[in-house]
Image (cartoon, rainbow, N blue to C red; front, side, top):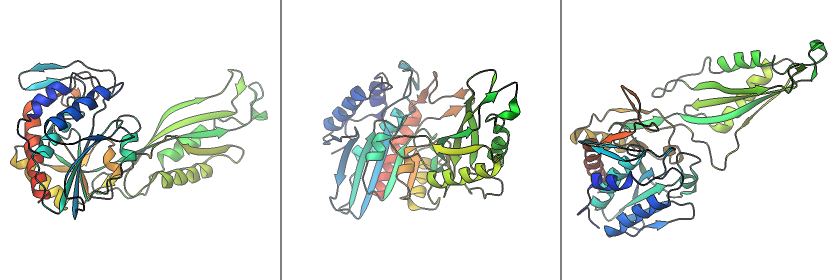
Length: 363
């Protein structure tokens, strides 16, 4: 298994034209074909994850390289100009995938080390692939656009609905009913003050709780009996989804009038929410990848990641997020935007950095 003949930019030029927003089958076929062309046996599990490994079968250290092949809609066509590749997935996350492949092909793990490449199919929606992984890794590197910085932490994301129930009545006699929409006022006050007095995370800062959607009422001349408010939670460690739900429901119950019924439920989904994670910035994994990034020409800054990521599923094992490209630049959004792009020099630097880091970690 060698890296001979693999060029991460050439792979990216093949990968970006392949639409993977409405299905990943064609992109997964390209990935499997690329692995097999380089002498690596690849498997696709029942959840659609592409898996390949090399090294010890009973390792003392298991290093996992992870990213995803799905992209958001709509598909943005591939374009190439000098030093830049444009198109959907160029930075999120086929650019990071190309760099991870370069490192995986070049890796020659020691007798007590195993390296696994795990590429998931559903990161942008429900993370069904990552949720099904059972890798028992000791160290994880997750490919995302970080501008060659090493990201050691990220906020989690939860979502749920507050439901307020009153009593319907004729709007001409409002006092004969209980107005569920009126009860939004103390609920919004409780949401605004929910994190008062809570300690901020040293790397991620404070958690946020944001009302995002509201609906209620059935008729314009009727006191509304029900109102629903959707909230978005960006959590910090050690908060869990269950702990957040309980704490918010208690705060809401204490805030509304006694004649209003209130409850809060997390949005149903088939996979766990992406919870917050944090890796010690002084851990060997972090310092090794940061040094390799700087040696390859990147800044190698150690910082949080600003978006939720499947790295959440691998914590509390040490995990970092790293890759070429940016979520946004001085002109606005890049990832998930119509102008998505990645610089080819950044892809090559990421490939060099990851190759060096994996060589060091997999000794």
